[in-house]
Image (tube, rainbow, N blue to C red; front, side, top):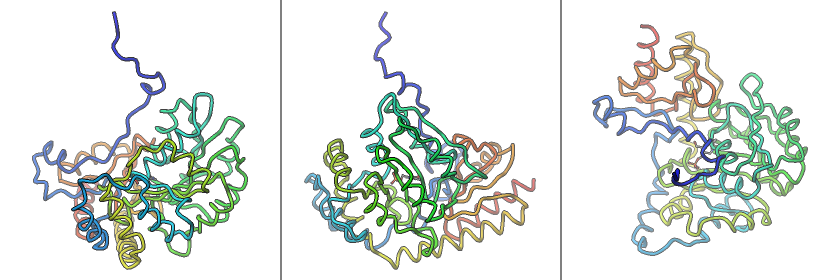
Length: 367
Ligand SMILES: Cc1ncc(COP(=O)(O)O)c(C=O)c1O
């Protein structure tokens, strides 16, 4: 008897991505009002989108009967200006997730390896698995990415390495010099993806000039997103910068019109909105300090974060604590799928949201 369709074995082995719990779903399940729910689960920007993005998007919206520019010319020009390169060094993505997937599709196949750190973004493993490559997860050192360990894990079969700065879900950062030494040590047949999704949350003086490294290393690709500091998660906008030879290869497998018209306009409109980014940065640091102080008062361990989220250790009852938070209308992120079953990841919200979370959390912890 036929079994129906046959998915590739390495695809049917994939464990699906676990996203933050949506507000509507939580409201339905717990009988709550959607307007009374605080979501601190997906590292979104509580300030919303900048006016610069909104204005550009509204102007573009009247042209939605047309396909977007398949080459995302205006968007890529804006990114190129912002990064100080020419637009042939830039590829547009339907979120940076898409670009992580595309680079994996470009260089991975059965028989090859993909290396990344323990406690890193789950899309890295997924994108390797869907191409039948072997995943090599290098143990973290004290929760931090161990660059020496990653370098040691690279062999002649390794075609792709992911590193993240700042890292999700830990929030930890890497030292600039250490990153460059690492990139320089990677053989040219292996692509290094430096994922800078949270770069605008790092202290300005610690942010590396990663585009300079792209100029020097033909096997380096830097990815960034508009989903976090720019507040455009729902639109799906991201980009990668790499040398033109690599970008040109990626373009061969990029779906036509992958970045929609509104996303192109909004992202181009806000990419150099420094005033907005400064506000986002300052508000995030205030939120981080508030939450850290609260965790200190409760005697809980947390990791020192440079993202817009904090990983806090709550112990064996993490699942129940999460349930209790949901019952009170607060959504945070359990991180058992990241191998951190005793921790919760809390995104930093507006002051009122952080307070609402903390009140509920403290009540549960003290009970
Ligand atoms: C480390 C990291 N990289 C990339 C992304 C993907 O972002 P997007 O696809 O929204 O651009 C995320 C989103 O959570 C992330 O945490």
